[in-house]
Image (cartoon, rainbow over all chains, first blue to last red; front, side, top):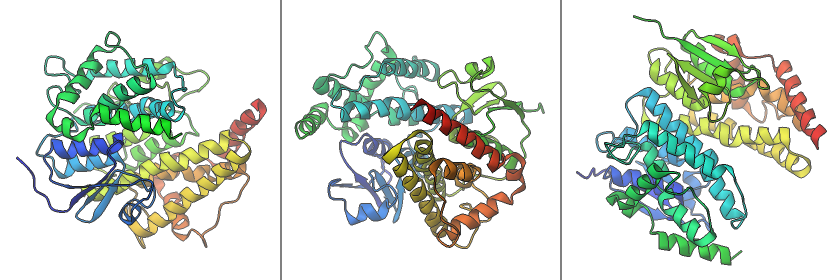
Length: 224
Length: 227
């Protein structure tokens, strides 16, 4: 059932994994919204006014009020539209686990991928595989293989939404820049999770195609 | 009703540990306190936080929770009755979370570089640190005009996340080799500092700024010595 709510605008940038997270949350909950792609090389007045502190995307503008930082935005979306596709668990300890692993992902994996890209694939991080293995362990502990491939079991939960963009970014970096992620043997559950993400109807719309990301990555390499 | 077991593993100068102490004390939650030596971490710490082996860790009824903002979010959920930290309104909640996150992303990051960096990078860290405090001053004026805290009349999630930096101001200035602008430039910030410092729950666990400054200088000397 689509929730029609006026005045929901997303300031987006299609390759940004942070932007993808918010798009995915909106689609999972069927929230109608206006998507305004941003030119990050020539930032709009709206973006600068909506996020004056960081001047970054994504920004969600709801009834004229801006919210920035993807994890904070997804929290907000889950609180304002709790009925459909609830993302954060009810249990306080489990919620803490989702937040902890989101923070872990950003500090360790997201940070490494960022350095990898900036260094044109030179950044070596022996810990990268180790970090993927830790995430695999988290999925074994928090997920339910019988229920489904996600941290949320059969349906996507908060942590799945936070990780989902990697389902397209990691293959793109692998194929264009030689990134060496953990293998299916090393991280079978994570591989299954990312496979399920790419098949998910909302994710298919929220996440760009891997080929498009590859072109984008290739173009940036050439322009350096 | 069985009593909750609440234990905090901490290291006294840690800003992150102080966030947790502030949250627990504001809510009047009693807890066991264990001081950790970072050069000789207890088995309990290593088992409670195997991923980072860092403090603070809150152990509630045997279950460990790590990362200070995750911990205070958890504390607010488990003990909602007393001194609610996150506002009920989703937008106000998002604003409080944003400024708590800003504390880590910008203020702590700059402070960290002040301790570790050299030369031009060190100078930039000082500029970034001051910029972050200026932004906090502006935010206080916009979010809660005429009120002492981000939370209005009482400390909220953002106040608790940012307050621990106050006892580190002296240390950062020493290590950074600068003097922070005063109340004429940052009126909201200094009113906030005074208001925070007058809260009993805050006074309870805040370490002395002189001791923190000594500690900061020790850390800086190590970096300079290694250079």
